Amino acid sequence: MLGSSIKNALTIDVEDYFQVSALAPYIPRDQWEIRDCRVEKNVERILQMLDVSETKATFFTLGWIAERYPHLVRRIGDCGHELASHGYGHQRASDLTEADFFSDIESAKKLLEDLSGREVKGYRAPSFSINESNLWAFDCLERAGYRYSSSIYPIRHDHYGMPDAPRFAHQVRTGLLEVPVTTARFFDRNWPASGGGYFRLMPYALSRWLLQHVNRHDHEAAVFYFHPWEIDAEQPRVEGINIKTRFRHYVNLHRTEGRLQRLLADFNWGRMDEIFLTRSRDTAIWPTPKVK
Image (cartoon, rainbow, N blue to C red; front, side, top):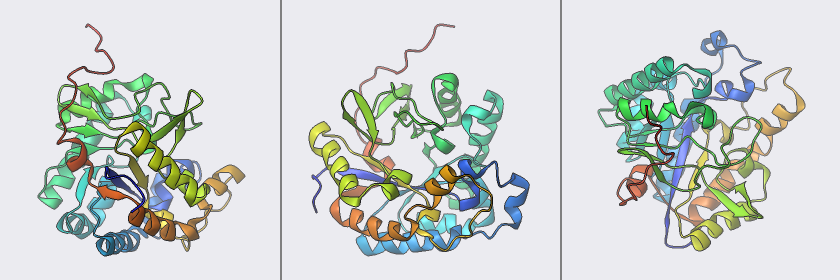
């Protein structure tokens, strides 16, 4: 194992290829039901890969998926992995009103708990869509009974990002942590180091080096994420998408599973709740609550 002794968090955002935010302009929600749903097969492949490497992970799961594949939800829990919430219908938090957002996260939490028989402690916003404009989302998460969020990506990106947010786990409300996906700090800027399209685009050696840097230089646990559709090179191609979206979505899909297998061997991995909710934290709350 090339990483340090620090245990990092391996996370999977359980959604299908046609639910990706970047494809939303090309695939209306009313077409979801008629699309070839491949998430069940891909999650099974991931579960087998994790079993072989004796790795536990956190699965941020859409309520829409859980409702249609309840046995998959139960299987994730029965295999010893953490079941967490990705909301119900993959709507960006920044596109919802406060009332609609609360309804979405509350209903998703209840659905996942009812199906699995396990407490759902964590939440990740679709497309990391909590930012400066909707920090009220943390009030909603606290009220809904979540104990942590992993909804901020502290980088600059054309679809998401909050570059001035803290890079590592921090308290955002009483009893609620925000655990951002991992960045590496160089040249007064945060750089992506935690999976997704960047993991498919960059050489594996660079991804590995960035995670090692966070473990050894920052002495912090990394949070890595990927999606089931990213190991599925045979997924249907969506017609009419622009060049940038096509590149981002399809680049190196055929290499992802092999890279993930190397990643599992090179680092020490675990569940979000077992890594971050067992630590004692500074009681300071970020951002400083406004006086009402």
